[in-house]
Amino acid sequence: MSSSASPIGYSVLRRPVLCAALLLAVTTAAATALSALPALADEAQVSREQNESAESAVIRAIVEQVLERYAAADSYTIEFAQESYWALADTVSLSSARLVLVKPSSLSVSYDDGGRIVSNGESLRVYVPATGQFFVSRIGPTGVVLDPAAILRAYEPDPRIPIVKKSGERDVVTIALRPRERFAEPTRIDVNIDTTAWIVVGLTAYSTAGDRSSYILKSTIFEAPVAADEFVLVRPEDTQLLTRSPYDIDQLR
Picture 1 (cartoon, rainbow, N blue to C red):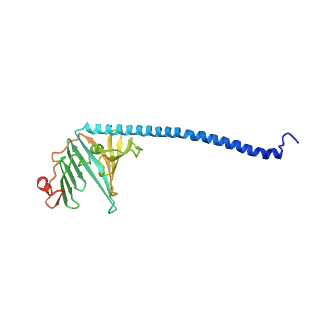
Picture 2 (cartoon, rainbow, N blue to C red):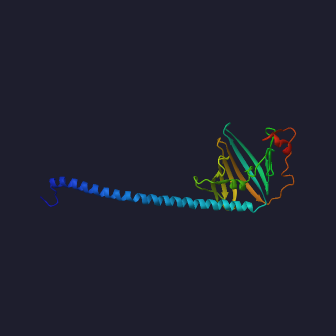
Picture 3 (cartoon, rainbow, N blue to C red):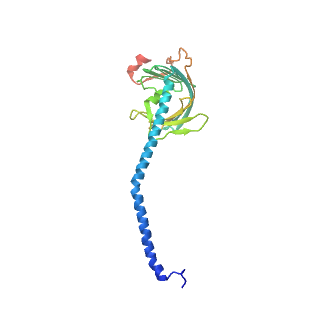
């Protein structure tokens, strides 16, 4: 019998020995791997926390930079387009408008259909020509959130949703915000920020009822001239007056 041939008996006997050796090797490797799992898990947790912490720092820096940009101006005028989705009726409405803000608290919004919103920080007047209604109410210091800076102050970044970088001509990032006050509406606002000009260029607000309002801020002009009657809104005689409280009527209409 040549030396290259293996006796049948030896082959049969060697198979269990090899299996046992393989089993021992696999078991040892598995034990080693299992013993390393906690360390790997700890490293993954640390890495994940470091990434989240780094992203949170980036988001905070972006928001602070934008707030500083708006804070440096005494007034600004914003031209925007609005798309509103009403979930109950499953309808979408489109409009365009101009927002004018003069500090400390004068705000005016003029829609293309003649609708108006005017606030002095204490009262809110709204004229809706489509329904012939005029709404008057007292408001708190955070009652009007159409101002991009006011939104950033009233909301905070949602740590569950990572920052999204958008492609395009401008260097735009999207930050998901949640209200600082519990149960406040809208329950979430996605803010598109131009990180070159440090201004808000888009907003999408979501409510618990499924309603959604999206705004594209086409232009933002700081320190633009403001007309003397920009914040004057008188109720037309043929409109229905609506108030939040009957005690508001005499003082506010």
